Length: 266
Image 1 (cartoon, rainbow, N blue to C red):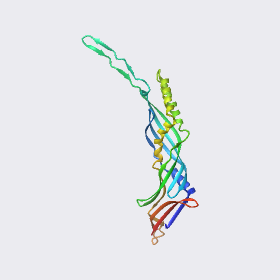
Image 2 (cartoon, one colour):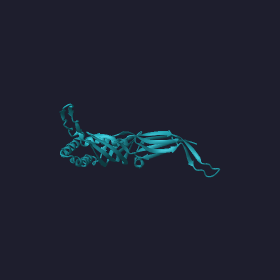
Image 3 (cartoon, rainbow, N blue to C red):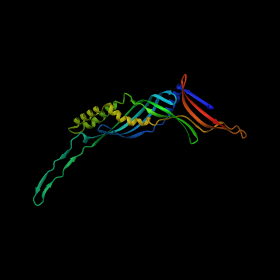
């Protein structure tokens, strides 16, 4: 039996985990993806807000309604060559005496790629199952909750508005194209509508998922050689004990508790 035992119920676990979540640094993410025929480079930042902890014996910490606030800045690109027909000046040839047949070069117009910046912020919720990881690392006993499984991400209601924002941002640029601008704008907005929310989530999912996958929440961290009492004088040195073993388990009786046990020696 452990010499030292500490226990926290689900109410305490909620306070512990939500405090740890709010302090957890999440490095920004960047990369590129595609939304149908369009390409987008992105930078994203996020922070955890809260979750509801459910302790499940013998070793699962389930965090429901795990909420993540996120913000994504997109550089959204449309290759007009995908929508506009190729346009080439006709080649003209003439026969010149003593020279032969001479032709003008064939000149074709390549349409540019239009890039539009779009920014959006919203939240996403998920349910995540964490396992308990206990290890002695570099002379420190460490107990952590390590994510094992995350349910499908549920995006907030503002996320669907990104398609509208993209359409509003790019339409004026397309309308400025002489003669055919209105037709291109209609085609692009029709494609965005066809992509729909499902396609948009296919873009956002890989952007937001790295913030949750690999998530580690610290629970307990203590040096193996632990000072119990400070020195009281030259003849009364500090008192240390050695933490020989640390265990962490979820026990279920009248209520579910996260129980930490420590074996010590002088």
